[in-house]
Image 1 (cartoon, rainbow, N blue to C red):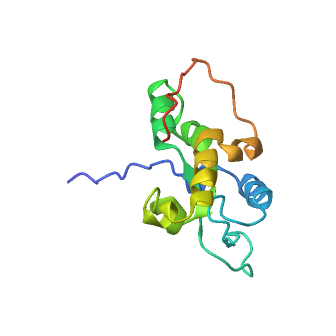
Image 2 (cartoon, rainbow, N blue to C red):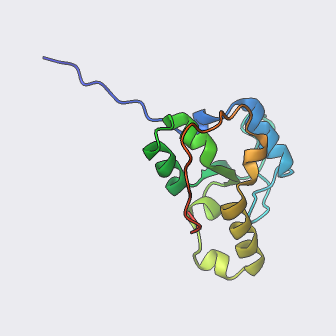
Amino acid sequence: MGKTVKKLKASTKDAISETEWVAIYRSQKGLCAICEKPLRNRYDMLSHGETAAVDHCHAREKQLKKAGVAPVDAIRRSIRALLCAYECNHQAFTKYWSDHPERLVRAHKVATEFPAQLFISAIRPLLVPVSFESKLC
């Protein structure tokens, strides 16, 4: 009887190094890029705050993979910012944000400018040009 082989899937958690994660965290002053709540530094066991999620654009990741970019590189190129794991990363554009217009402005900036890309090193140039739709991902 053959063994079932589990397919490994690239994830945002493994796509960036500790150095890159900490650089993004520090650039955001340890705060969620949208609601500005303090985030817990995953590499500092004494830090306090919300669990941080590495936010990325799924549409951009998919387009890059279709263009032949390796899965981990596609994730790296689609990372936008660190967000609090529940409210901002999973409650996108719900009543939670609609009651806070300043959060909508920050969310739009994160979704369109990909601020974390400034801190992700050694991104190899694309061999194939990829055009991205201007919609929010």
